Every structure is written in C-alpha cells, then in structure tokens.
Image 1 (cartoon, each protein chain N blue to C red):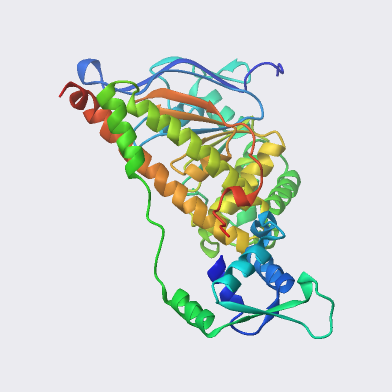
Image 2: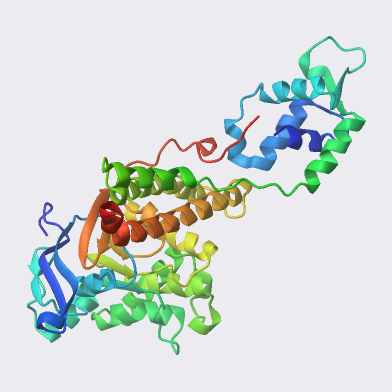
Length: 177
Length: 246
C-alpha cells in the first residue's frame, strides 16, 4: 500500500483525504474496509522514510486535512522501481503437505480426512467470494479482484484433489512402509 | 404434494453396468432426499457416477436396484410412456452442451416443452416470453441458437427447462462449456431460482457452482463420501477475502 500511495503522488502533490478517495475509488467496496486514519499512518511512515515531504497549505490553520504531500527525489525513484518490479507472492503449500506427512507418520489423523476438512473450509471461503461477486455489477473493480481470489481458490481446490488422490492410493503403503 | 415429503427421494439406488464379477457399479447403494426448494450440488471426479445418478433421478436410465420417488410418487417402476410424460411435464433438464433445436428460434425452443405438455400456442408463447425475460434474453427471442453465444444458449436452455414449472431442475455440468462471465450469468439465474423456491440438483466439476449451492454431496466410486450443508454467506466484507496491508 505504501508504494501505491507514493505512485498516486507522482503526478502532483495532494491532500491525504484526496489520496484516500482515489484509493477507495480504485478498490470499490474493497476500500470500505480501509481504516479512515490509515492513509495518514502510511503518509507519516513515508515522510519519516524521506520519500515524501509535507507542507501546510498557505494561510490555513494547522489541521491534518490542510497538509499537502509531495514526492521527494527518493520517492520518485522508488515509484519507478516499484512499477518495474515483477515480484509475486509465492504459493504456500509446503506446510499443508508436511501436515499430511506428519498425520500419516504419527497416525494421529487420516490425511484424506484432513484434505476433506481443508476442502470444506476453502469451499466456505469460495462461497463468500462467489456471493460477493454476484452482488457486484459486472466489470467493477471489486469483481475483477474477486475473480482473482476465486481463480486462486479453484487452483487450491484442484491441488487438494491431487493430494486426495495421492494419499488415497499411497496412504496405506506409505503408512506400512 | 405433502409439504414434508422430499421432492426427490431415492433408496438403495444401484446402477450396475455388466454382470457378476466384471460388473461395475456406477451408482452403488445410494440414499438421498432433496427437500423442496433446495439447491443441491453433486461433485466428484470423472467416472464417479454423478451423471449416472442424475440420469436415474430424471428417468433417463433405469436403476438396477432401489427406488426413485418424485414428490411422493414412485417413478422407477413407471412404463416407458408414463416416464416420458413425467420427464416432459414435471422435470427440467439442463445439459453441458445445451441441446437446443438448432432450426428453432430461442423462443420456439422454450415454447416446445409447453406445447408438448398440451398448452395452447398462446399460453406457450406467453410463458416463453416471460422466461426469456427472466434469463435476460427478451431481445434475442427470435435468434437461432447459432446466432447466440454459449452463455446465451445455456440461458435459453434454462428457460426451456422451466417451461412447465418443473418439480425439480436437473442440470448436468451446466457451466462446463462456459467462460467465467457466462458462468456468473448462469449462477445469478440459479440464485434467483433458488430464492423463488425452485428445487435444483446440479452435477458439476465447477467449484463455483458447488459453492453457491445449499448443500454439497461428494461422490467417489458410485458412493456418497460426504454430505455437507453450506450455511450462511459469511461476513460479506470483501476485506476479509483479500489482503490489504498498510
């Protein structure tokens, strides 16, 4: 989020409340969950890091909403670097895999049962996401983001199917080995 | 119909292909009750027997053993003729490949089941108009299926399935041939049907369909391995679904 706020300041200096409105506009209902004070927390962090400077608008009383934020040279560099980054969150599957291995090795739980329980939980979340999408007008920002959420959950559900197949076929042999 | 009677009820249902030692049980001793107004999804890997189950419920195949009851009436023992009549008048089918009549317009496809059930041409036309409106295709009524997108064809097929106010809509992979936008359109329609109290049984690979059902049955090797009621829709806060860090 810090990077996104910086990038919004790259075109021109702006007030905190304006930045907040921009973010909410881009995120749709997803932005509703943003804490109203969050933008100021982010801006003061960026200020301490030397990436933005804050000026009082002339002749007005010292109130937060009168402050205008602008990028520093370092801030500009950071925005350029951020736009060029290709980092992406890595899937975190090893822990669940190790849980199945542990369940089987200790015989404290049935891996196939654990997979089934995990599938129920993912389906529950998919249901929430699916209901949220159905409530959105087609083509909205939130619908686009939620489509990404749903696609990932579907991939995870397919992977759970693969886990179930693996542990149903090999489970007994692995346990006896 | 008795209010407490399930719309669909099966007991000890078996469908065996082949005989004796080499016989394969596509459906293996299944019991199921679907109450009125429920949207039930049946999931499972290819070959688990879920499509066969749907065919048995819809009288498209006969069971090797067991009973099928629809709205308190035993149907697996009906004559071919009575069964065909039941399918036409009391059941609505939706298939993956749409199965529309290519030489008929959207409206004519939807009118056909009503005409076959003995409605007048005027009644059938009026009903088709209402149903096409309901699935958002009032403007495409005169189009041939070949002039419609896949998603639109499936919506016509759903309208057709509803023509005779069926006891239950039976759908086999209804979103299997659709892109994500068309899938959402179909899910919206199912959601509306469910709100209106329509009973639906949907066999699907698509987790999105399963996730919008009231109840999810999982099949493996012809048997039910799980039967889960999907309650509630969570907090409704999108922030709970996506990471949004400061």
